[in-house]
Image (tube, rainbow, N blue to C red; front, side, top):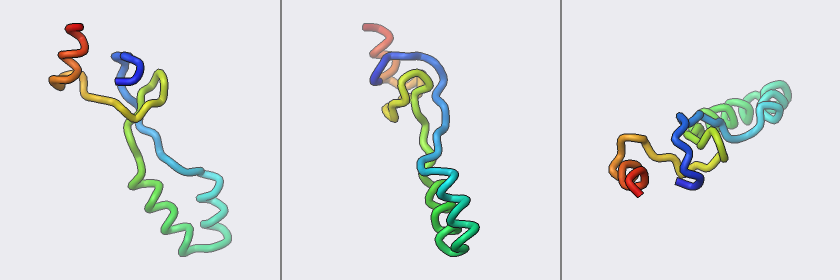
Length: 68
């Protein structure tokens, strides 16, 4: 929606892998909690601009935008 790219979206995981590793090494329980949060926070983002406003290419909104 943000840039109009029709490329397939990519899955991005929020948070930092470095912080996750440090939490696992130093503190087991916060490491587990952070890992669970990162796994649940995955989202599809535009492969071109990184926007989270991605819509499926066969949705009515996508068809309407292509027609314009």
